[in-house]
Every structure is written in structure tokens, then in C-alpha cells.
View 1 (cartoon, one colour):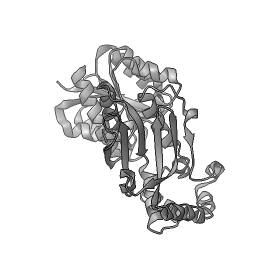
View 2 (cartoon, rainbow, N blue to C red):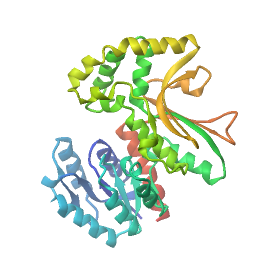
View 3 (tube, one colour):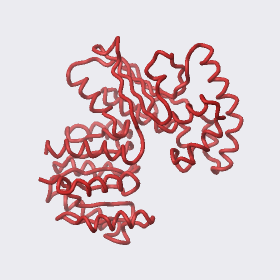
Length: 348
């Protein structure tokens, strides 16, 4: 039987997921696709041809409210679906305002799969309410399609004790540091990352470290630590005030950081170490920032936009558990979502 899904968000990740749904044929039935302007809702399932039209429409930068139901009407139609069907709601937005509809879906017996980190990093009480049902999956929030959350849950469910998690969780920052390692000035590395589409529209969002902090908090909360985002210590790669500048001016102001970053790299090199931007989580708390890593560490092996996560546990102490691979991009994130959808579909 096809798994009914409702997709919130039709940006790059939502579109990649819809494309995957098309390729799966009868295994997934898309009931609704929404964006901030409205959406297309069909209780019997959106036909493949119509779904392709929606993807084409969004590729042109149009809002779904112009080709389907507008705003609140689309959201009301989705609320009606919740009582008529039982399926999986997918949050592929970057919105802080989806907690209400996600809780409504869970209350109606639906499963929920998240690529959106924000519902999980709000108040601890929201996190607790979302995860209590046991029907929330969020593999794609940390490491995209890599099995980071499922591996951590497996360790915990089988009685292992987690001493520390260390991870390179930003493909963008990993790329930047690798460029600096091979001799590219930091400011030029940022421009190169922008040209490749690795950064947010304003690269200050990446350099702030806040996205890595969200991922660290999700790992910490999965461990059972009732932390808030403010409890995660963050070392940004540029002064926060620079983020208020227009992009071109921001890039010019990065020039003085070239020497500073080169010095830190050389200092690490003299100790036989390399620089990595890490998330570090343990029962004592969470932090993100630049860390000097020994050459012998698996973390030193990460290159470019690769994500790499090391679990140090009672069972994996002498030889830590290492997960690595592409941890960013719409296709990888959609793969993580799809894995969660299939698991939830079987359980439901």
C-alpha cells in the first residue's frame, strides 16, 4: 500500500523529495504540497503529471498559492486530511512556525519526518511534546542522508553509554577550512564556497556557526540532555556584527581574517595537528568551534564538504564508531527524509 504523505515546503529539499516520490511510483502517494503562499491538496493523491507541473512551477520561482489553494485555505485543507487519512507529514521548510501543525498531525496518529531543524531546537517543552509519541523521525536534520540519528538511537536503545560525540557537521565550513589548508586565503575561500552554491545567500549565516549549534543541540537532546540553544557555546568564524553588512561589503571586511586564520592553521601544524570546525557533545554539555585535531584522529581525514561524526562510547571506546559521507545538499537530505518516511510507513 502506498504511503500517504503531506509535504510542507517546496524549496530545494521539498522538490528533491517530490522528485523521489515520482520515481518511486506507487510506493508513495503525495496528498499535498505546501509553501508559504498556499498549496495543492488532493485527498486521493496528486497525479504524477500534476506533481511535475508543481515542480516546474516552483522552479520558476512561483508560489503555490497561484496554482492551487491560497494561504489559510490550503492549511485548512491539510487539517481536514489529518482526520481522514493516516500517513506521514514531512517538514522540509526552514520555518519556526510549523510546530503547531506537526503536533496536530501527531495527535491524529500521523508520523512526522523532519528536515527542518527549528522545531527541534525551540523550547525544550516543544521538543518533548514532539518526540513523546514515538512517531517523529529526524534523520535528515543532522548529516542529511547519513545514518547519524538512527545510529545514536540504536546505541542508546541497546544500553550503550555515550561518552562523547565529535562531528564535522557543516559541509560549507569543512570546504572553507580545506581550502585554507591548501593555501587559499580565507576570504577567497568564502567566495569560492558561494560560487559553488555551498553557502546561504548571506555567508555570514554559515560563518556564525549557528546552524552547527542547532545540530549539536539536536544530538544533545537525543542523548536526553534538556539543553536550550543558548546553552550551546559557539565560536563564530567571523565577528557577529559583520553579518549586518550587505554581502559585498561583508566579503571585503573578511580580508583581515586571512592572516588570523593562516596563523591558527600554522600554530596547529607546528603541533602536528589540523584545524577542524567541530560540534562536541557529551553529558557535560555542547559546544561548537575551531578545534586542533591530531593527525591520528578520524576527524583529520575529512576533506571538502564531507561530514564526519565520531561516537566514543563504552562499546566503541578504543576504536570509535565513525560515520562519514556527503552531509549536505537537497538530494542527500531528501534521501534521509525518504528513509524516515519508509520506516514510519511500515510502523503505521
